[in-house]
Image (cartoon, rainbow, N blue to C red; front, side, top):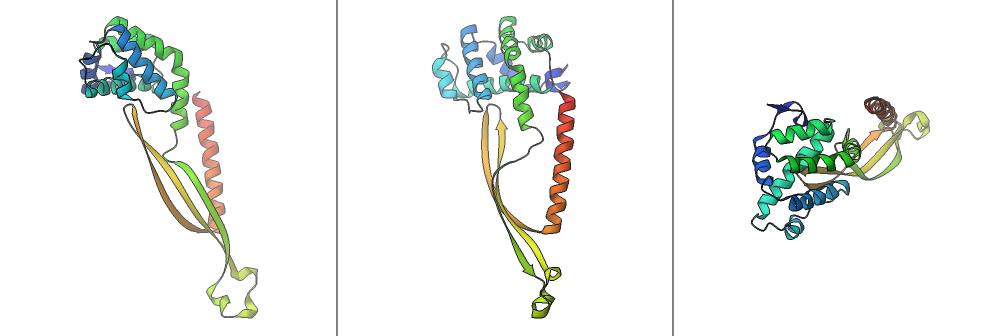
Length: 217
């Protein structure tokens, strides 16, 4: 069976297994877990599984159980926002997975109240592989090799502008409710003429991406 929140593909087996596990939670525990998960998503924070466990009345579930349940809920909620699934369809689909109607209603209700915020989070992460954290540059004037041997020939035509750029980027890898950030540092040099072409191409690309994004809204 295909599901809209899975991009019209079959639901992963691990989601089915976690839905069966979360179905055993009472409404109070389920709402507590769901609330903490959504707060962590909205605030871009890592969810503390230990904190969730201390808040639940049900003590038979272990760390890995709660971790699996939150990962499944994260998948369902974020993918529903990603694929613009309407609340009615969302509830029908998660009930088809085996989640009791009362718990499915809680997920749908929470999703409906913050769906726009979730889409904004996804929008902020779209079209971006790495985030630039820091950048420094300097421009040097370099005399061409042939002109360097002739002091009478050191005019502007024999001097090249070279830009030296140092930068660091941050990449984020998400694994369910957990996000891991890594920082990479690198540098490169580029001629003034090539730098102008690069800036022109990047500017045109940004304008095109902005137009495409606005058309999708």
